[in-house]
Length: 168
Image 1: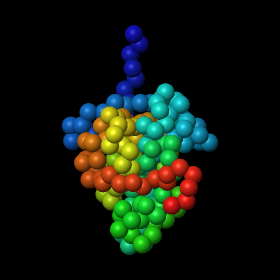
Image 2: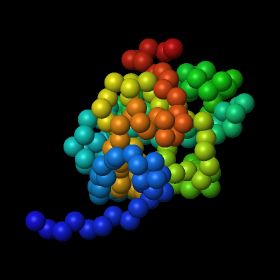
Image 3: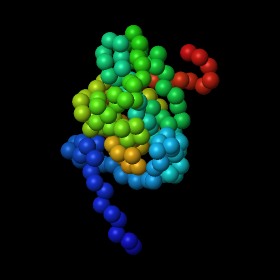
């Protein structure tokens, strides 16, 4: 069997290591024009509902708020505002992402950010054995138990995605 190349640790993996939380690393080829969850799920042969995307928003009252939602869902900013005790939340402008979090689009992890921000994970994750989230670099994901992960990032499970096609 061929020897696997050693993957350079990211801040996200270091945070998991320090907390002694088991995780599995998944590496995949990425392209600038295909940084979405669908591509990741296909590349890793995972269900889209198990590949979670990290979305950074700004709350009118609290400042930055991190949302972690399933790849097959759309974030509901109104629900996130309620969960995070904000009057309103908006998507963080992309040009501000790296400066605020230390991560680039397509490689933004809820783990190992420059600072700790209020984090909300969609409640659907509670019913899954594992979810995958960005490991902090494009082409790299970590698979973790969401029930352990939520404590590590001091997150809250909340209903933060749109339901069906109806407006809420």
